[in-house]
Length: 178
Image (cartoon, rainbow, N blue to C red; front, side, top):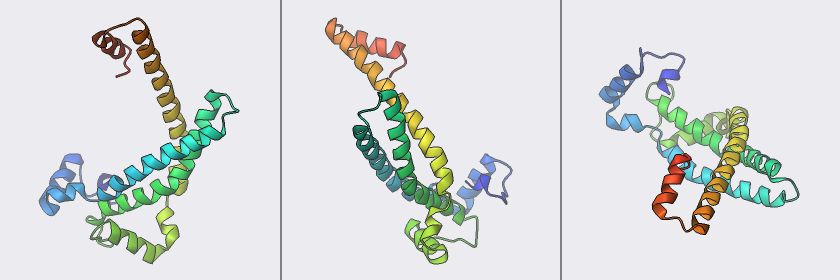
């Protein structure tokens, strides 16, 4: 994140790495990690829940259309969770380098954003997040669905033909599924 900052004092990633270790210690490398760790669990739950809920309502549509629509819808709602999490993570990562924004942790960062910018401040970058999450989710879930169907066909074939586990694993590796 610091290499992307507009006033980057580093000549490259290695200098950035060494400087963080020297001035902030090993913990400086993990500054801002708590926000995406908590957010990642919530993100996954919301993503799959909304995808399944919308997909079950679109059972009248062909699957090749219902899956990307459901996934994009999940991406839309997911953006309202992902955007604040990413904002806090980025602010935390820049906090030590930017003396105007000094935070003691993710919660302190969240409180400062709310105090200085209000609730809308947490949604900075929401539109950009939607532009990434909606099509990204559509591609992800379509690929996920195709992968699951491919594995299911291979497993069914191996079960029906009484193929051994070793041969089945070999087939899956050859087809780049595992």
